[in-house]
Image 1 (cartoon, rainbow, N blue to C red):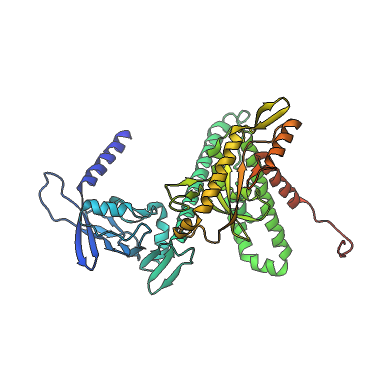
Image 2: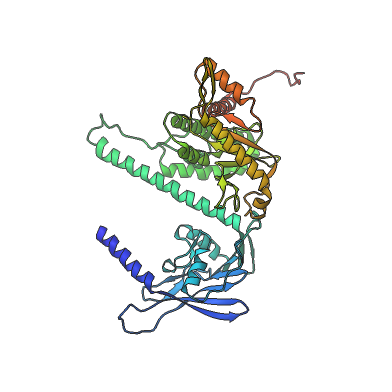
Length: 469
């Protein structure tokens, strides 16, 4: 197997050395780029197949999706979709290529969701190919507008138009689906091996394991809280289809049933979220693991605020090229108020971070880790405020609806001290802070548990509809 991999890499390296481009000047700043493979060294000169891959204009780059064929030729990569056009990037107009280095520099500037290696065929990357397949069933050309906020896709006269922000979100969702099902497939294989090899011969030592349904699976199955995980997949699919087919009738005839189902979804998902939070608190995870957890469960972060908030961006750059770009300083998460749009920064530290340090007998003071985190997030808040104008100019739609009236700053750090004197010292210190809120991990968990209890509480019954005042 290793030899086969090495051979494949050697073949690919040899092909890379043979890549060549022919640049044809069309005038008026336009250039066509043709791709071909030079004959191997020492080989007899033979006819070379060329493929038109790019048409370069200062304000637009036209990409002709293609793939190599077994006979050395080229063919369209997607049925129906002939052209992918990308508007001028924020880094400036497309430069006119004249040689291989120019073309490779041009390909390197392509958005990350586009294939840059001609050996793989230009166009969408392989994991995003379903985007091209779907569009190709309707349009012959797709045009991606850089900027333009989060405008909805449009279709007119054979051209499908997408905003940059829309396609970035679509690509991110596509790849999240792939990752989720890869993880699920790995779990399924482990369960199968356990049941077929261990439970089959030593059921006492290795009891048969049942597949656990994730919150996502619960939601997808029947849109209801309690699910028997032993239900066959075919039956689960039938339940989903039955509910979907009858949803309009249920909404008309028994709307309270749908409300009840929705409530069960929320409580079941919240309960699973709380269980995961507790499990992670019992482990010694660092900041990176917690950032990944909150990125996957951004709803939890909204509980750190007194007003409804929505997630905007993970690891946002608060002082640099743009909020999602590189080359600047960044915080851990950026949120905004759902009503006002006022932004908020969240700095995540580990639950094991020390909050207090000895100062005087019976009088602890804030630790350097705590004061450092506060200083860090306040500096990010200041840079965000002063650089907001530039960030909005370079924004790709991520900051749509966000404002900096009075940015909030939150530090999520440590757990509450156990002794009364330490709790008093910690609480007294954080409540005199200005422009920053300090919250511990167990306090955030407590807010989730309180919300779950409120959702689970039965509605209070009253014999009177009188207003109680």
